[in-house]
Length: 212
Image (tube, rainbow, N blue to C red):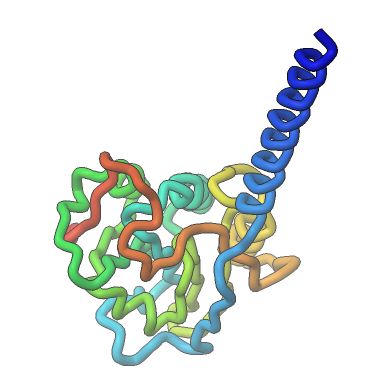
């Protein structure tokens, strides 16, 4: 009887340790930003992404299979709704080299397409992402009409969690011609150049361009 009690107690302690360890790992993962990136101070001259010459351009780069970026795209939609028409919005889907799946079937693409006035564009091989210095899905950039960088960073406070964040506040301030508390924030998301950051059978990559 004593042996059984000890075994039961030991099993409970092992289970509890596993749960605590798992929760700690999840917390660390959620709050771990992507690799640091350096954005160019001016719009890349060789870029094929169209910059608006009359108003700021707000560009977000996402990995088509990054489920974390659903929150980032949602925050972008919130920013667009609050500052309707204040900037040209572009969502760039960085497609890893060698991947030819149909992006328009992905949930992330549909979410981005619902942002009023947004242009969705495919970046084959992540060429444009590299030009802008993006390495993590969900990286947002705000540029002046003449191509000067105003903001570079993420718009969520942790991985996959929408809500108030320093990035969202900064972009809203800039689009309202106010002084932001910061112009650079960490980006929480998957590696843009990982062919499959998430094992999600329903997620797909993209190979088409939205002509809007």
